[in-house]
Length: 568
Image 1 (tube, rainbow, N blue to C red):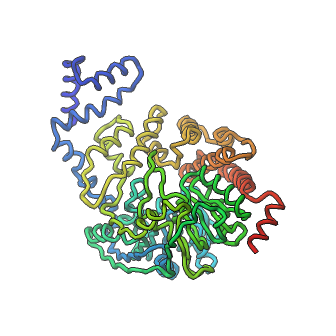
Image 2 (cartoon, rainbow, N blue to C red; image 1 turned 60 degrees about the vertical axis):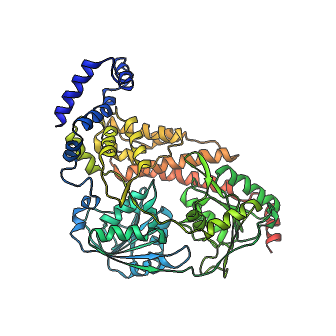
Image 3 (cartoon, rainbow, N blue to C red; image 1 turned 30 degrees about the vertical axis):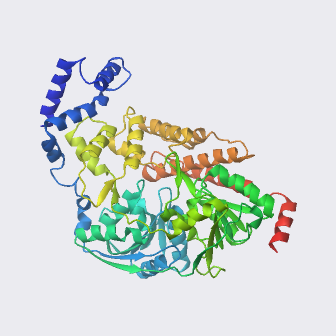
């Protein structure tokens, strides 16, 4: 059928050129002038094949039913009879604590974290309590015993690193922040562990908005689920008034929330100017080790006030007395929009953490004009998540490659996008797929195997930074030539040595450099024989973190004296 469609497509192009579709005509001219590749004809061929054989094409591609049925992607796990418990509740309700108690008491268990910081926290907590635990993230592997030859029975990992092959079966698994299953960028990672994690007992922790979709999926594969609901442990009070735009009204234990990196540093300077308190900062671009350092300074009152982005929404234990929204708008995909009620509640709920020094949490706004909006967001009923995210696996791509030999990866991804037929429980994470298409297209002429291209397409890259994407291309080019990717190339990629940090712009350079070292370590975890200098990457990270930490500390004695005077 596919060969027949190809014959018809070739005949139509030869007979109708140049009176064919103007877009196809343009591509053909570019191919003739060596400005484009013949691979760029593939979408036109696929449209032709679908118009001639619409049913047959899908039937051939979906003949084993795997593409349309994600549960069948994990056949070994389907042989298990798993039991699920969903712990549903708001922030600071004790839901995760209950699941972790079961995790630590199990003989063999895995914890799946949304962030490296949380994976590290559970790793440290387990080992401190005498429960030997290993840690696995995209960039790092640690062993509770200190030796890879003695793996522990407990593992704390980021959700993307959980093993769903079905070869190793756990007694208990914990999947944290389960509502992320509906996220358009990362939701597929939660769907993957929901369907594929080989554990006899699986505990999910998250918001109530994901309960219905999880129940639908679990029951659809013939497994049982129990839902436990939790209420917030300490009250959260929405204050009547805002701060009236006055920085002087900020007090120890306050966290001022903004959604722009530049705003955060401007606000930090203003808070310190008008209050005399040193101000901690937390935002997404800050390396996780620094976020933990800043959080510790805030909790220990060395920096009694914090300015943060929505990065505080998960993964940090903060002793916040009051959340103050500097803004209720954030940029998403280049456009400014009002916060969702889910995000507003997640952030506001960080105030009044259980077992902190405060007996309740408070939330307000910095400007009076935002107060009515915030009150509406916090009182609004949240919409339930309807579908779980899905993305393409390497195994599916390899099956497509058998049907379309010599077809480059970015075109195979387009096939997947065009012919996938999920039921109503699932949606395609187009954001992730677009990133994979972009990277695989950029690397298409390097002679990389499909497996290697797939690996590079999943690499953690800041797509908004030319420096980061160029570093990925440098690493891939060296790798494709069969040369070891050395610490020397890593230094070149980050422009080492970097200039000293004298302003926010200098700090940004260090943040991007840290992201590139993370990328190198991520690739080392998957191809250690080619990315051969992880030690160099870690030493560079230590230098970068040290420099950035120094730039965020109070510098003058007068500032410290004033801080102590006002705080006391």
